[in-house]
Image 1 (tube, rainbow, N blue to C red):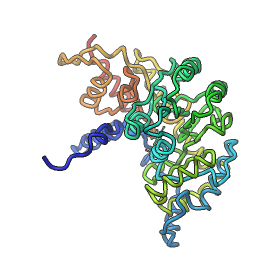
Image 2 (cartoon, helix red, strand yellow):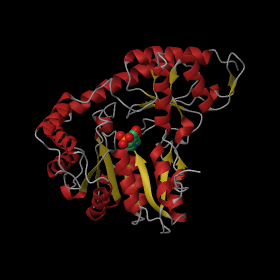
Image 3 (spheres, rainbow, N blue to C red):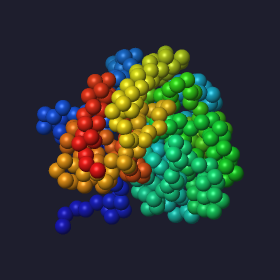
Image 4 (cartoon, rainbow, N blue to C red):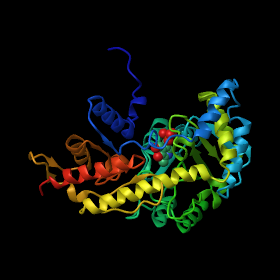
Amino acid sequence: MGLMPSAWAQQIKPSPTLEIKSVADRLRLEGKQIYDFGIGEMNPELPVPHLLKAAIAQAVMDNATHYSPAAGDPELLDAIHADLRLFGLDYSPAEIVVCPGPKDAFFKICVTMLNPSARRNRLVAFAPTYESYENLPVLLTGKPPIVLQTDAHFLPDPNQLEDLLSQDDTIALIVLNSPNNPTGAVYPLSLLGELAEIIGKHEQICVLSDEVYRTVVYDGIEHVSIASFLPDQTVLVGGVSKEVSGTGLRLGFIAGPEPVMQTVANVEGNISSCVNLPTQKGYAQFLHKDADLRLRYEIRDALCVRRDALIGRFSELVEDALWERPSGAFYFFPDIRCYCGRQTPDGRLLDTDEALALYLIESANVVTVPGSKFQRPGHLRFAYAVSLETIDVGIQRLAAALNRLCA
Ligand SMILES: Cc1ncc(COP(=O)(O)O)c(C=O)c1O
């Protein structure tokens, strides 16, 4: 036998959304017209703002191609400090670290906060849950996260969390994600206050607040971070991936209490050295010029048009599914359990959301992600940062495929 990866590393599962992306890419290569609601990405439909692209290009031409300090280029740390103030948060530049993307930021927080040999090293996540929260802690501690289900509106139940925290002394990190992937739920202010009060009674527990969709909130709702209630126990994650469509730019940031952030910076320096400097310089320029959030809200508004188009089409054509109206991010997560258990025209039983998602790819060229990949079976996730035509034709094709199923 040749080289084998360690059994420890083999515990990590592939990213389900990237797996689905490769299915869609393969079908495209075969020349098929795909209606792709799979990957959570706005590019190329809603590209990175010109201002940011030009600033990155200028930084390259200005030879900003060396290392920055591990925590980040001082100009960018200042700009993020000012930007967080727009959301009512006061972090000094010394309390901020930039990383190569939000997923990387999440990993470095786990490295910083989860001690493999300590008793208190478990992570709590709420389902439906974003894939990395599930996979990365296992790699570090060998222990899967404790997953709590959310309610019918995809919101965490404070009583359930309170019970868990009073009985279980192994919890080190609680992940909250609002606006949420995969549901589009936005946690109300009162809920954040309740959660903060409960968690605040356990001062060794850290909240990891994933706010990568903080500027993508609709219907006049304002984004609020749990850090405004619980600054001493929260580390906040943001980044350029979603709010400016910069998934390939790989820049995320973390803000939190200074002692924690100093260690995060050491982790960053040892693993990545720093984030690529042209992107840092470009984002600093962008944040200065977008101090009124106008460019980011233009992207949000374009996404809102898509949300409304998707919900309109879906409610008109797909009668049996149940769904919640998403208030943020760019995901729609209907409950399609009524279609599970039906048969395809050629007699194949579709007993799970995964079987249904596969059927939709094969028979309608419509790509979605099954809810079981997010620990909530019986649902499908639609990422709707796509063209209005994809929404219109894709949902028609999906509805026709569902209508061909026999009870
Ligand atoms: C909630 C959430 N957090 C973090 C990430 C990670 O972003 P990236 O893959 O750009 O690092 C994503 C990506 O989909 C996400 O949806």
